[in-house]
Amino acid sequence: MLSKLKVILSLILLAHGSGLFAQSHELNNTLKENNRIIKTMLDYRYKGGSGAFERDFFIYVDYNQISRQSCTVGTTIMVFDVHCDGTLGEFSIINPLNDYISSQLQKFFIMTKNKWNECSNSDYEYFEIPILFTIEGLQTEAVGFITNYADKEGYPCKGDNYYHDEFQRFKEKKPEKALKAMEELIRRNPYNELYINEKENLLKDFPKLKKH
View 1 (cartoon, rainbow, N blue to C red):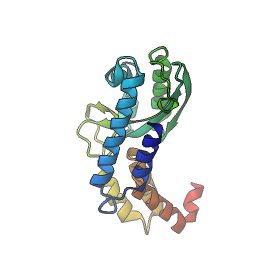
View 2: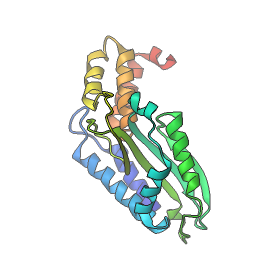
View 3: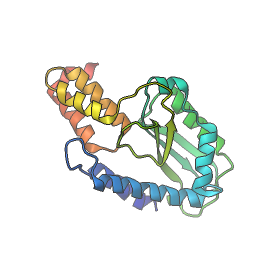
């Protein structure tokens, strides 16, 4: 199972959109397949299955008001091990959104102690679970295994298209602003290789940006 998951994640990194910023159907389908594999693993390992895992997530993880007011939107990835005997292993976060959300996710992981089924195959010990934090109605291409929607509450947050336009408008004359826009897009969708390539190209063209 783990080898298959690694193949799926490799495909994600190799997928290409139909346009510079378009989320391709291929990539979207690959992300959905990745989520299906995660669901299968949680159904096997977590007591009560993936549904119980998601219910516990919403009990312990708070998308706090400060994060919502500051439009902290994005896909953060929980990476952890649960040994076949049910004991918790290492925990880390890829693409952290802020310290508060990261601490909430770590707290949730610790709270899952004693909620794991034993296994006989080490392929079922390793998990990478994308969690999307976003505002209700916000336009974004991001896909998470779990999506935490927050109400608008009167705080306007900009959709992906705004940052696409910002990058295109500033990438030649105001690279600092272009980099900021691209980093926001990567925070929302860290699986989009086109975004990562665009950021790398911008840093090559403007090496002084690396110092900021």
